[in-house]
Length: 96
Image (cartoon, rainbow, N blue to C red; front, side):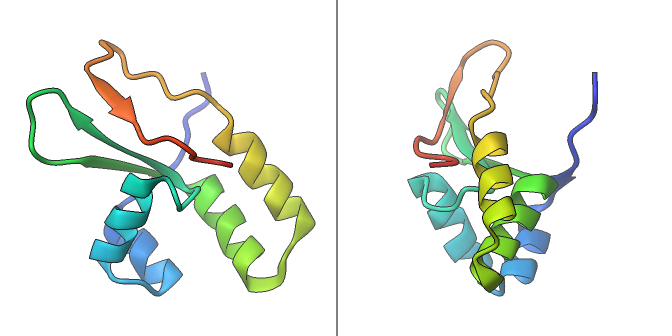
C-alpha cells in the first residue's frame, strides 16, 4: 500500500499564510479541502490530518485557478477516511 505524505498543521498554516487557529477552524468547519479534523469520543481536543497532495492542489487552485489542481483536489478529497475503530467522525464537506 502506498504511503500518503502528511503535513503538520503549523507547516500548512505557514504555507497558506494563515495563523494556526484559522487553519484549525477552517478544517473543523469543512471549509478547507486539504485534510480532516476529528475529535475522538469523550475527548476535548481535535486531531488534524493534512495531506501534502491536497495542500499543494489547494495552493495551486487559489494562486491561479489551475483546473488540473481543482480536479486533483476533488479526486483526493473524495477518498474515504477510515478511522479504524470508528470512535471519531471526520468533518463533513472535505473535498467539495
